[in-house]
Structure formats: C-alpha cells, structure tokens
Image (cartoon, rainbow, N blue to C red):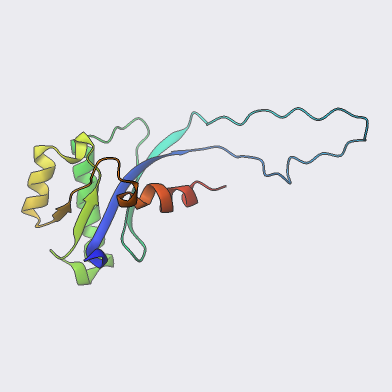
Length: 148
C-alpha cells in the first residue's frame, strides 16, 4: 500500500548565504582577542515550497509566488499540477491508484478541495495530529533541502 502513497507538505525556504566554518577562520596570535562573530539571522526573502514525493523520488514541487498564501484556490492549482505530474512521472499509479497524504491545515480540508479529490478519484489518507512518523517531509526531506 505504501508504494501508492504520495506525501505532500509545505515549508518556508529562506534566502541567505551562511559562512562555512572554514570560510570564517582567521589567523591570530596567541595574545590576540577572540574575533567577534556576527549572528546569522534569517533573511527577509522567503518563499513557500510545496513538495510532493513518493517512496522513490520527488514527484512534484512548486514554489508559491512571493506574498501568496496557500489558500484553497492556490492549493487547488497545486493539486492540478500534482495530478499532471503523477500522470507523467508515475504512469503505473494513473489515474486512480495513488493515495494523497497531506496534513490537516484548513486550506487542505475545504469543500472545494474535497470535491476536486472526489471528482478526480484521488484517495486521501488521513493525517493524525501530532504524529511525526506520518510527516516524513519534516524529518527526512526538508532538513536535507535546507542544508547549505
């Protein structure tokens, strides 16, 4: 069954250029003071990434426009693109053999989204609240994407 599951989640991606430990090294004498380091802060430029993947690879990803919120209309557009990506990249699961797993945010559970899923024969896997084992994006994918 888990071969058919496509997990979808969102995360913020910040634009910054952190220094590596090697880049921040400085020569100093034994008697000189320790150099002061500026604290790295999150940049003001950020984009929302919506990413969907299965047990093999990323099936679909989409950056949401700056300032755009993930509301029902935006999420319907993402689902339409995801559906097309499944058709192209995972033909064995097309049209109605795949299961969508996404969290329970309000934009995912409005009537229009439920109607879209029913109309396109997309099965939805329920997401239990506060269950990290069912949110693999947060623990497997997103930390690797955000590494420098």
